Image 1 (cartoon, rainbow, N blue to C red):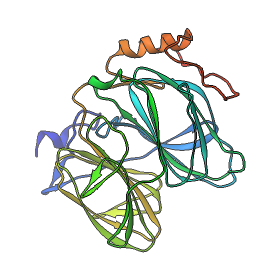
Image 2: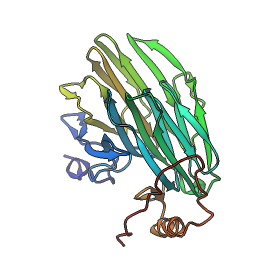
Image 3: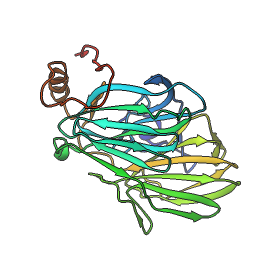
Length: 308
């Protein structure tokens, strides 16, 4: 038995245990949180797994039908990219750069916080259904203070393969390349199967990967995943074979682990506690670092006291 087999999954080990010659899978149950009045399933960060490559946050919203409207008040970010993949409904994004963009199904909104940005999110009037995934990508140390920006991607590479529909959300896959801005090696795929099918996905061994069911169920060997239970695959895999049940939709995220330590507190991602403390002090002081979000009529969110 290797040492890695007995190590806890607390964000340090990147490889899953090997038993009887087979790489094991870590199953992570989500926590249910509230975002802007809507319940969401949060897979990471959690104590068992804080990052998957540079991905440091994963919320699955819905599907919600005739539910409460989302209203996320004005709040800041540093050191990350916010990434929204929309499946049903519409959300209005506004930010302190003056951006005002509605995201519709099959589109990605990407906000690069860099050294500081503020934004809001609201359901669009008349749309009471919502199904989306919201993630954060931690910026590497050399890009943490990049200038903030906002990008909207209404068209993404989509293709059929082995009875499933693939959409490449960011990064590259085989001969496909998404237009989505990124600062370190990363990938995300949406995979949907109307009928039962088996897929073998070729992986990059230096990447670590996670798979989350957004609808329905999928199996890997003798393990089944549904109800937002995330499958953490770790690193060193060359491939994974999935059995998708009819109507299954899954999200694959992956990427190369960042070389530097990442700290997460409230809506801030930093490479040191000092980065985060400085950003929180600037937000609380209404520093010009975080300009006002125009066009939003709601409250400005405030963080809890820093615990260190």
